[in-house]
Length: 371
Image (tube, rainbow, N blue to C red; front, top):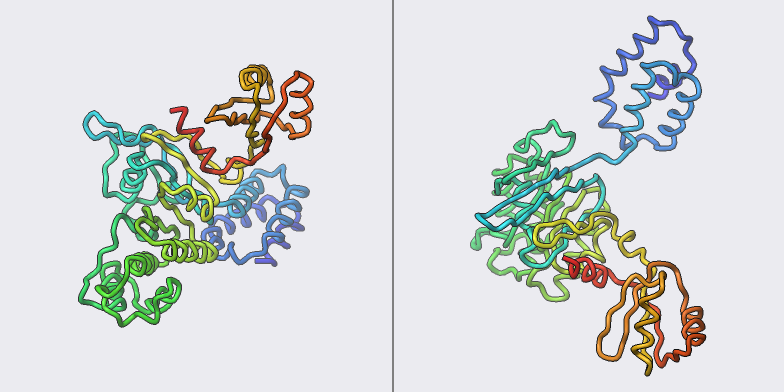
């Protein structure tokens, strides 16, 4: 490969030779894709810069550059386009659109009944959509073929109670038509290798959930889909599931999980899609959602004057009253000292002043309260 790139950079501009190399690239590009992950990204980006410097005016090189750049970008795993599902007069999912990129952990967050499980059911081909569509991977892969590269747990894990963990997973391997050689490896990931010969009926709820995750990993999926993975678990079980999700994600598997637990999404996910009554309220990185200016908790014996002053300030986007505390949410940066000084000039004395950063929970409540 290195020889190929080096030759391409320094070859003369003979048309026949250029055409030959372009044909070679088209023939070999698909083979290259499987090795791209092991190529040094620095080398790829350096090659792109050199190619741009020497040969960007040539149409065949533009195509070559395009292919190289696409390989260095994150791939789409799943794309939803205006997905809608109606159950009679009830709209469970309404014009839902978002994209899942390779290598991230996505959380679909929303209250119970917001359409999370329905959305997962549609993309897993167990629920028919009313309108809209979705595509897996490059957009040219059928859902039937795509699901061979997907691992999923929807609702409660079900296995034969009289069979051992290993026996149940062997049966799953036969159903999925995959080798049973990796059963021990997957049990090790979920911390159940020492219980491989224990019958399923002896497992706790947390252990059953972990076995279900091992089952979903047997086909080495490119994406793992989990519906409320910690539902009903005790704090220790929740902690174990979170650690397993983080371990799987660290190995490069894309994860999509549905949850109504804000804490779970904040601790595990890199990206979040917030939905309520089937409508998307936010989609993007968790960090960006938390990148707010924060808020002030204020208390004063001159509460009416304080509220009137807050309503006139461009730095304050909104506020709310709860008991004696007035919470003022910031639209622009403002530190506590400046706020206190400005209020004092207006003759308003504070008896309580605390500046805080909005948690994902507070951001979520602000979004859902608007709907």
